[in-house]
Amino acid sequence: SPMPATVAHDPPADSGEKELFRIPFSPSGRQLTINILSTWGDAHYVGLNGLEIFDAEGVCISDPKTNPHLTIRGDPDSINILPEYHNDPRTVDKIIDGVYATCDDLHMWLAPFSE
Image (cartoon, rainbow, N blue to C red; front, side):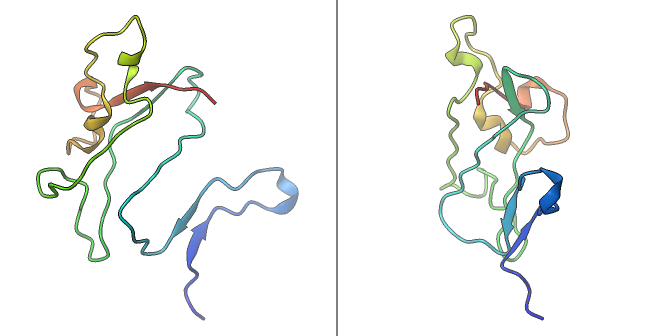
């Protein structure tokens, strides 16, 4: 049988759960948008350690050192938009800095979260 076009989390109809994600096989395009819909418990902040994107051959294309056309932005881009924060290093560019398995704030992104 042919491979499906997407992989999805499809909970049983009577479970009351909603679909959490849908991932297309070999997606293509020039822009990737990620909408973060919830956090792991913090009502006020959301963060990520890293993001890696691979092409169809398995080559990482999310490294700004090897992909000069790569740009990233967040909305908001950091907690520095809050009046009580200035020059906090946890900005959105950190999620593509190549350091993923870390607890070091210098390699993480943190932003205010609102539903």
